[in-house]
Amino acid sequence: MNAKRGYLPEDERNFSPAAIQIMKTASRHICYLLNEGYDLKHASTFVGNHFVLSERQRLAIARSVAADKQLRIRKEKEKASLDGAEVWVDGFNTIITLEVMFSDSVLFDCMDGTVRDLAALRGTYRIIPETEKAVHALFDTLKVQNIKTAHILLDEPVSNSGRLKTLLADIGEEYPFGLDIQVLKAVDSTLWDRDNVITTDSIILDKCRGWFNLIKLCVKKNGTKTLCVWEQTRK
Image (tube, rainbow, N blue to C red; front, side, top):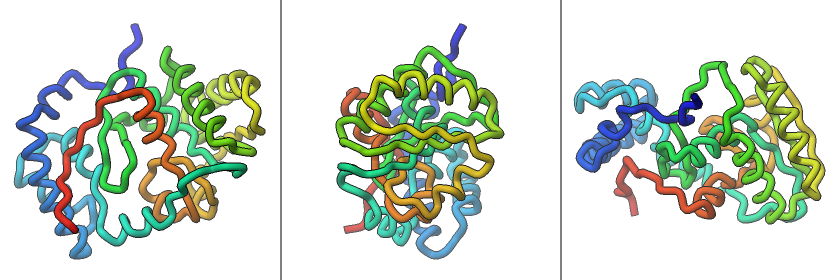
């Protein structure tokens, strides 16, 4: 039996309307600390303890918020289109979020405009029924964007990276753009100095030269419901 990617049974309790209101209050406290220079891990631990948040709730907030300076940097580097571009795709990051979308598991609208999930693979990965749908969604969006070449980078230490590479290559034959799939030991650092990056990884967004919000487009096209656990307080 295939479990839903990124889903836990307690999610209904963790992200009930009442719980989300508490999380929004907690997120304001965390954002204040971030803007005062505190580390995200320490801030989320301190505030999470105060509001007695579950680990799942703390993770959702941590993945959703950012300091004002980070938000400005990410916004300045966001690309409006990819017409004729070479793009660099954070493979597992992108495919897994799209798998979560097709699994109808929880997704979050984040302060930087991205959509993120709570899937935690910790080095393990297996192809599921939703994987093929995720790959088609990625390639369909790249086709609409009229890209020249897609460089898809997969993490070598993650299990079944070779199987995913084969699936990507097989499906990619249907599409008109160039396709380069690499299995690397250091995907994140490889993307740090690239332009036209497709990822929702916060560190990569802060370091790369430019990025495109592909996941958000896919979520809108699919009509997927997302949750918001923060409140906009700045003008």
